[in-house]
Length: 232
Image 1: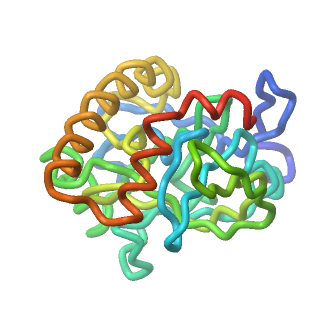
Image 2: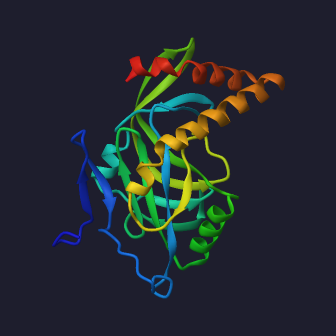
């Protein structure tokens, strides 16, 4: 913490200042007695991945949440986007880190009913996906793979949620041994491979089941993600 009690900030390679959280946390053997049940880490979302938001295809671009993070606006960690199931915020037990890949997080799970529910859901695999609640500020309409897409250049991040199935398949939560972002960052490549396999399996299933118009358009964009290299 700084002398004024403000959370520390971290400078990334891109030069942006992103919110990290209320200082580092050192786990101890007595952590459970101290009111900490464990740690959950992962990716709240990944950049340059198309997803459906409010019936249209959106793609969150690198740095889109920079303003929220730099202004130190409180971001909530919820279960299933339910405000009644608040687990923590970035003012206490939630740490956020944005880089060129996506928005990573670490949750120090509090010894509360909501905290215990979140930890059990991730441990069991019942809920191990992540989703973000946001409001777009600046978007760019662009044709990708013949479909109208909206590149989210700037957005207000309100909350991140633990869900059973998220819009971005590479966004996930897992139990980690300690509050160390290296445990999350090094797992990104593996998550991409798993998501790629899952994506192709899902697309084959959709094709055989006569997918809806929106799903069909979404599939076209996913299959031609190489176009994202020219959209950045």
